[in-house]
Image (cartoon, rainbow, N blue to C red):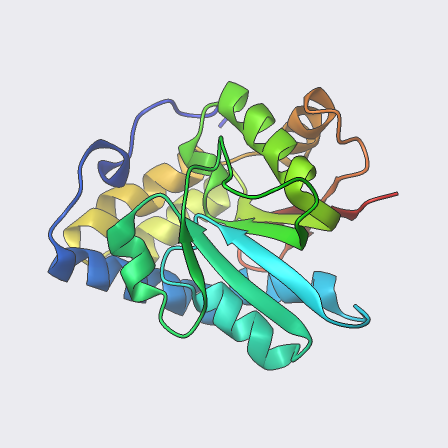
Amino acid sequence: MQRRSTELEILDRETPPREMMERVVGYLAFVNRWLGGSAAVERHFRGVDGPATVLDVAAGGGDILRSLAQRHPNVRPIALDLSAMMLSFAEGVPRVRGDALRLPLADKSVDYVISTHFFHHLPDEAIVLVLREFDRVARRGIVVNDLLRRWRAYFWIRLFTLFANPIVQVDGPLSVRRGFTPGEIEALARRAGLDWLRARVHFGHRFTLAGVRP
């Protein structure tokens, strides 16, 4: 897989009925809990001192935030998503509706900005702009969590989603094809002026692009 796919996923082209979206949210929560998504984010918060406001951009069902707050009681979570439907699933955490390209927050108004399974939905140019928005509102650091683009991950997710709901069957493998190599995502961070962010590979064929502000 030398290049990222530009084919749009189903969820990028249409809004399925709520019942179907609830199944998608449940699938993503399962993947995050058991296949490395939550753990990849949480490891970057080990040793964080004092209260920390954490904004999750494109938070979806909010499972990453809930898991993070349970393991790190000093975390004060905020879920942000453009979709009102997705935010309705993010029960138990404060919620804000907003666009990642124009975050409705003041400069340096949160400690950390995190995001999971979001960047692979975006073209490279948009990722650069979103990273600059993350940098604008984050006082202390950024953690981006997404999928590695490689054949092992692709064939693995094809097998794993064989009996999943129809949206996941299509979008799961395509998400890998739209994913990144560590070098690609670090290059986008440099384009955004954030050369202090570094990519790290994690269990579950995923990476984090993360760092603490110098």
